[in-house]
Length: 339
Image (cartoon, rainbow, N blue to C red; front, side, top):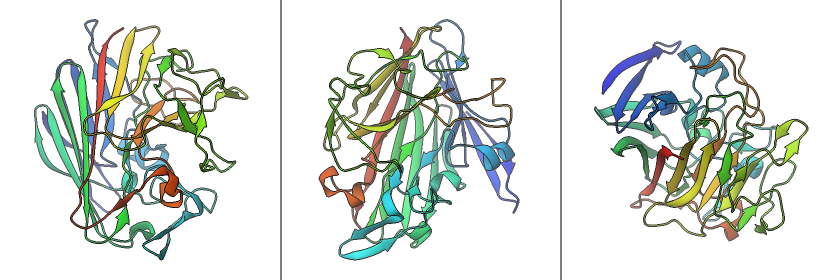
């Protein structure tokens, strides 16, 4: 593994970059958002890029749609940028439509510089401290992000967090996958073994209902193309699928996808109860991306294992509270192989 500096921010803060290799994978991780900048995979036909990334730090700071980042302190949406914890009102900093907090706010974990605290040829450990009051959240949180290559074709992500006061924590990886390197992922085949999903309102906040996928465009229980449901010319998926109602002790299958041109299969395993499918409906950056000529709507898809969105306001979804003495832990494996 090599460790370098990807660049520095306007105030002179250096942004580290680590390169991991092994098992047919080459992974570049940058300190901004603990993001995966590049993921090249060789399934026996030569290495090819499988995620979207950007060329420069300035491009990330100015144009990145959370590309490859770790989202937090609470990934996804909290309706009204507000919730009640232990009888106390918590008002967050909104950053979507003036009312919703998305991915932890305007200066969430994805916008922060994580420290590279340990690295080796096939692993990298990054850390971030989020002080009490950060984006409105109570409690000082210490978060860690560990990337490793435990076996051939497998990239493992382990996320942990602790707090000194009751708070909520929900972390999620936000890579945009494109297994073929083409302009669209609408023809990628996708399977999500979920019988239920959480429908949303016009602000993309879950209504609180848990609805069957049966007979709907949300049914991915058998492998089929992503591009079924459209708003105009865009595949409109941005929804949480229910894999289980509680976290699993060991990673379970959340989804699998196949690139029809490269015949590359991605399997996502995680300990989380839900997985957010985002088909990149509003993806598009005005600068040249890494390994590509352009990036437009539906150029990549996200599979984000996590707790359900707006859980702090929806007790029927579970409990996102983290308390002193507890450790938040997520393990997610991305497994690549020839289809």
